[in-house]
Every structure is written in C-alpha cells, then in structure tokens.
Length: 170
Image 1: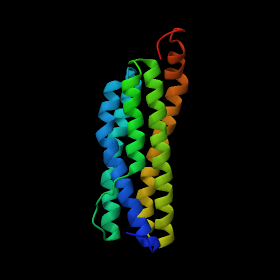
Image 2 (image 1 turned 90 degrees about the vertical axis):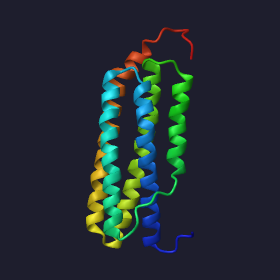
Image 3 (image 1 turned 90 degrees about the horizontal axis):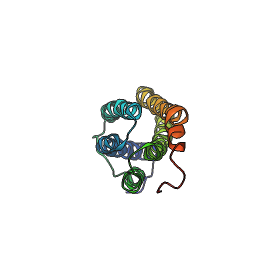
C-alpha cells in the first residue's frame, strides 16, 4: 500500500521495526553460540534480553497508537543477519570471527538506531509524545549496545584477532 500520510508512514516504520527486532531475537542465539569471547557472548546475551524488551515496548507503542501490532518483513535486517550467517560459515571460530561478528552486530545497531531515530521523529511531529518517549528508550539501549560492542572490539577482540599468525587461513 502506498503511503499517503505521515501517520501511514509512521505505522509502516513501526511494522518494519517490529520485524527487525523479531528477526534479531531469532538470530542472536546463533551468533552467541558462534563466538569464542565469553565477554562478547555476555554482551550479546544482555542485548538479546534488551531486544526482547524492545519488542514489548513496540507493542506498547502500537497500542498507544490504536494500531494492531503486526510486523512487515524488514528486508534490511534480513540482509544484515545473512551477513552474520556468512561470517559464521566462512570464518573459523576464534578472535577473527568474533571481530567479524562485532562488525555485523554494529551494522545492525546502526540500522536500528537510524530506524528508531526516524520513527521517533515521526512520532514527535504527529504529537505522540508518549510514543516518542518509548522509542527514545529503545534508541538509547541500541546506542549503548553499539558503544559496548565498539569498546569490546577496540580493547579485546580486535587486538586478539591481530595476533592471528601471518599465513593463517582466511
């Protein structure tokens, strides 16, 4: 259906976000199982729980908007998750795979931050302050997750990946 109003576009964005978060909830356990770093696994496990909360928060936003909480397949998230699947299949378990998966997860976080920022801006313009507040909470958690992954990469995972012997298989 073509979007003809900001309200229609807003609901469409909410449906996309709901799909993105649901896809991530399904994908994160496989990513967690594929990492070697216990600290990375703990970070991702914590974010999985937050992501489950994002879904509940989005359902609350739908309710406040007087809309049925339904997901519209988020093709962007589908593609990002596929990147993680490739990394798991193409890179041996260890620090190099962990570095690759952090990269994928950070791209996911950046996508989600952009989606939440856009949707929140629509909510504000539409005068839905209570909904904008809920979206801001999830945006903050996505931003923190990105920052935690970035710090972990810089301080632990990337230096460990750099210790991979020269000539090791790609």
